[in-house]
Structure formats: structure tokens, C-alpha cells
Image (cartoon, rainbow over all chains, first blue to last red; front, side, top):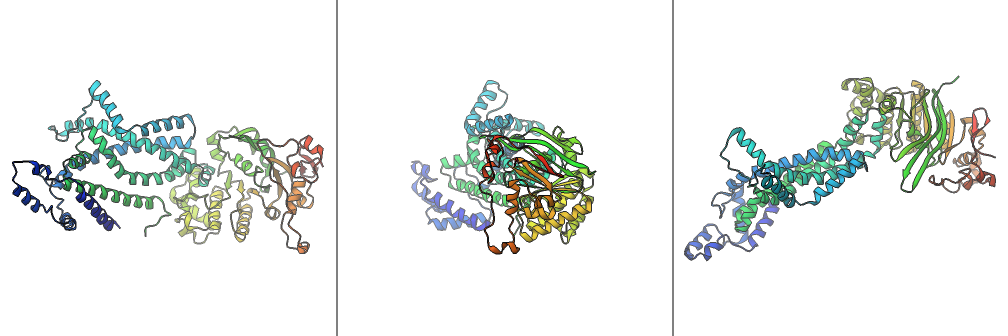
Length: 309
Length: 323
């Protein structure tokens, strides 16, 4: 299932990008210092005037050989470019998602096991607020407070710092605090509502009453019989949503000037750098499919009723 | 002199709802003697399940609350007892089985682990020892091939087999009282008889008392020593089983007995099965006087005027009816 899906996705992305207006050599054409013959030979070299299907096959064969193409704008290999950016995005997003989970699970479980209590009402309200505030707003507010007013944290993210060792680590932590907080709280707010709803679904099931009647203590009832079962759909949801978060983080990356995949995608689109756009979109597609697969495997592992076939 | 294991006195369990206070159990008194089977009968909404769950404090509070009364377990009132005190009684002294075997087991744990859970909590057994005991218990409740099946998950069992697992969980710590809330309602007729046989077998083997909640008078006749008939949150009649079937005094009890299908000689006339017209009244604003009056063919003005109290009409036989 994996391979045909990826092939199909790549065909669609490639066709759409090829049909899209814009030409990587558009700027060369309007530049009077470049002779027309040079432009024509360059176009021929990169095969830009071939039919779409032929270009797609060229791209596919190259891709399978590990050649992701050449960035017209940056004049380096696309794979080098992506390998430079991907770790930054993964680190920030991973930390943010971890923060979201660490907040959402305890808060959601506490709220779900005490529905309509004061704690539940406060948690629900805060989750709603957090979920409603867009990250570009909260991000700017944080920058305004912590970088400009208090001057505690840097607001331009740097990937090529000169320092090494512990100083390097400390500086990276400092510059990651705000983006991770903004993304993590936003994700966490959405997740709290899922966890709470899932816990509420489980608490009224008969087996929870069976567990209570065993006299094993409310703590064990909650941990073993409510949380364990309520987290099954949540785990799947997190796994499926991660790539979506990846896409959504593009805006946050722009605000904090994080040199990640998102800012690379936007600058590539702006400079008509088709090979890079193609590669990034393809990476996103791979992430979606891989995380869906992970979700399925996790589900089967967590719920014995679902068998591997 | 028989010992009263459980003695419920004037219990009131009410529920706060958006529509008002539902008086699901409103002044119920009943007791269970050591080693006997007490059947609690009544139709849906009569308060029998709430009474049963109140004993182990398995009522969600809120919306539920105890509005009065006592639940004396071996002389000690459970209502003011703390959660940890109740946890010591649950499974060890009073165990409970439920109506729906399909949903009473947690789908993500093996049945062995679920049977072992109360053993590990109350008897400090290691996981290995508890699982070995779980297999023994499964053999006891006649589940074939228990050593292999302890590692199976609930979805790999049929409804009847799951109810046997639920019974194995209940008897794991050797309780003195087993509360069985409609244990056979969700099962096929042939399986029902097997489960009831099994319960009687366990009762004889361990000398435990059973509080059998049911709406089936046939089940009552075959299994109970004494019977309590509930209607609209109240006890309307209580008697030993032979006495109740031979000499039912309350019109509601008489109606329940007439509603048992018969296939003997008397049924040759192909008469329509008797029924009690109407439904259980609202428990938010229960009618004044006798709550059964609206459905009772013998009702008079006196029935609506004052609420009848339980009064003795024979040895160990009480009835709440002015007639």
C-alpha cells in the first residue's frame, strides 16, 4: 500500500507543479545581460521543455537513485538543503508535541474523571482559549514580552552558531523556548479536549464498574482501566496529526525565523524553485504515510482486539 | 438464630437530575442472612439495581447521594465508611457481578490478569501466583482448558463464558456475599440455566450468600430462599419463596406471578398471558399514597390517601398494602 500511494502522490504533485505558472528562469529571461542562447541551452540541460510525463520519469529515476535534484535558487543539491533544514524542524516540532502530550494527558484525565468540577471548567476554558488563539498571534505576543521588553530570549533563530559544547546547547535551548511553547501549548490545548472526551467515554463503561467492585483503589482504577483504554484513540490521533502539525508549523517557523522546512518551502515557492518545492512536498507526503502506518501499528499493539493480518 | 450479614434499613438513594430529584430508592429495608439466596424482584425502574450498587457504593456521587438510611454489613454501617475501608470490603467480603458480560470485562487485558487483579490487591500475591490461582478459578467455573485460556482476551470468549469469567473474578477472594445484578438477562436461555447452576454450586461450595437481582419470577422460584418484591423505589412485599408463591398478598406480586408463562395443563385454554397494565410511575414526583394504586385493580380511595407501611401478615412475611 505504501509504494503505490507514494507513486500516486508524486505523480499528482509533479503534474500540478509543472502546470503551475512561474518559471525558474523567468528572472534570467528578463535580464538583458544573459544571451537568449545561454538561457535556451540551460533549459535544454535541465530538460524544462520536455513533455511532463518524460520529465516526471526523469525525476522519478533520479529520485530512486538518491538524486533529489538541484536547487535553481540556492545552486546546491536539494538533498543537502533538506538535510540541513529537516533536523531543525523535527527538533522543534518534536519538543513541542512532547510538551503538548505532557500537558494534555494529566489535565485531560483529571478533567475527564471529574466532569463539570471547577477544575474541569477551568481546564476547558483555558483549552478553548489556547485552541482559539492562532500561533502567529501568541508568537508575536511572546516575542514582544520576552525578547523586546524583557530582553530575556533571542527572537531570531540561528542555526549556524559559532559556539560549541554546553554553550551551544544552552543557546539552542534558549532560542527554542518560545517556538516550542507556542506550538506546544496550541497543540496541547486541542489535545486536552480529545483526552477529556475520550476519558469521559470510558468512565461510564461497565468494566470500570467491575474494576471498582474489585476494591483495588480508585488510583489503580483510573490508571489501569480508564487511562489505558482512553489513550488508545488519543495515541492514534497524535500519530495521524503529527504531519498536519508539521504543515501548520510553517507559520510559526516564519515568525520565529526558524530555518526549518517551512521557511524553506515558502522561500522556494516565492523563487519558483520547483525541485525544492517538489522535494519538500514529497517529504511531507512521506511523513503523512509513515505516520499513518505508525498509527495503525500502535493501534494494533495497544488494542488486542485488532490483529495484524 | 441466623446471622444477618447485610441489613439495609430505610435506605434512600436519590439522584439529582436536570428534571428534579429522582428518588430511585426511597426507604428500602431488606436483609440477607448468612448463606441464603435473597431474590430482589421488580420491573425495570423499581430501584433494585440502585439498591444493589448502593451496598458497594458503586453509585456515582454526584449526581447520586445517600439521602438517609443505613447499610449495615455485619453490624457496621457502610454509608459513613471511607473509600479505603470500602475497598477492603469490595471483592474480599462482598463481590458483585453485572448484567452485561459483553462489556463487564476490560478489552485490553487478558482474562487471567483481570481475575488476578483482586487477588493481587487483597492477598498480596505475586503476578505468577495470582495467575495460577486465576487458572484454578477458571477451572472452578468450568471454563475448558483454563491454563491456556488465562492468556486470552475477553473478545475471544462467548457471552456465557465471559459471564463465567466475571463470576471467577467475583469469587476470587472468597466473599461472604455475592450480589448478582441480573446475571442471566443478557444470555441465551440454555446458558442462563448453566450460569444459575454455577452460582448455586459456588454458593454451596463456599457457603456464601447471594443477593440475586432479577425481574424473572421463574428464576426466583428455582433459586431463591427468600424474596423481596420492589416497586417504584420501595419494598412492597417480602416473604420466603414458597410462602410468596403460595400466598402472594400484594396485588403487584400477584400480577408478577400471573405473568409467568405456563406450559402445563392450565395453559391448554390458550388464554392470553396475564400482564400488569401501565408502567412504573415517575420517581421525581411519585404519586401520593400507594405507588402502585394507579395500576392496581383493587385500588380504593384509601389507597391514594395514605402510603401503606410494611406490616407482618405471617411468619417472616411482610406486605405494604392496606387490603
